[in-house]
Length: 71
Image (cartoon, rainbow, N blue to C red; front, side, top):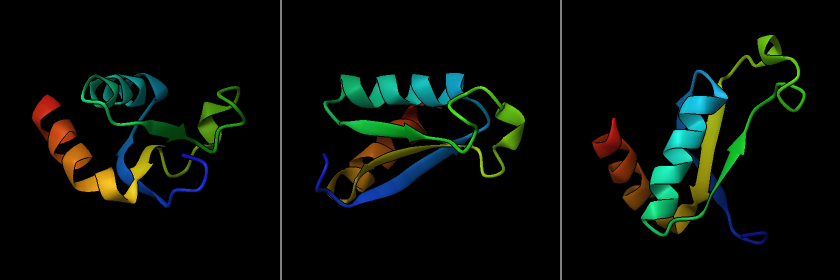
């Protein structure tokens, strides 16, 4: 996944919700990455844009459907 173009497929209020989404994607065989601007979880109040789940651009459509169904 290092050379792939990553796109944000969803944004969540906290790490727990993002990790649940990541688990749903993993179960479907889609690799994902969680990204947050919160000093590695030490300062959650710094996260201004939420916790983002990113996937490869080619997986974005399928990942979006999976996350939509899981909510």
